[in-house]
Image (cartoon, rainbow, N blue to C red):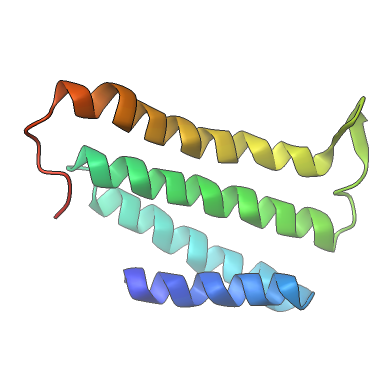
Length: 117
């Protein structure tokens, strides 16, 4: 499943790069759904869960950014110098916070836990 996930992700980004809107947008769904399933399946291992949640947030941010470019609202201003593209920072930072939580809080308190399957 993880390998198939990468295939969908690549097709999504190829669609974005070549501005093939239907391909890019359609590939969001399998890419995001599989990343959520992978995160759910690894919920018992905090190290895997945190990394897989970070990937899910990354895909979400990346997908929003792609859509904002496709629909040409990425450069419109929301407030001051902040554009709609900057909203992608919200899920990007959520992914960073998952990893910060794991490496700065959880892992130091559980040094003997198995990190991967």
